[in-house]
Length: 86
Image 1 (cartoon, one colour):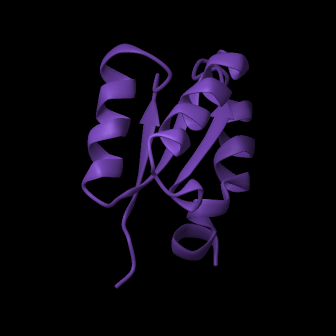
Image 2 (image 1 turned 120 degrees about the vertical axis):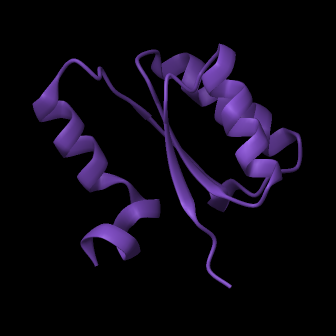
Image 3 (image 1 turned 90 degrees about the vertical axis):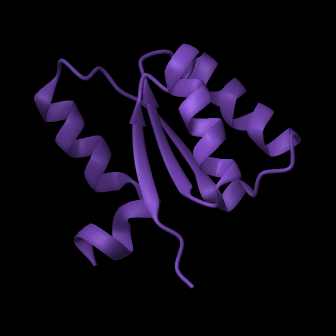
């Protein structure tokens, strides 16, 4: 069975982080976007340390106000390659 992939914006803290955790617990793969690269790395490390598969979480620093950056970063997401761009 192929896991579904969800994109989360603002996923490095608050509701976004909680949503990411819930989705990982439910068996989804998650691509997390936020502006703070350091905080994103910590989020990823925290979820892996909690026992989530590192293959199921991908993080990218991204300013959602920058349309060109959004297109570039989303196109580069490894977890999306099969479904959107394959």
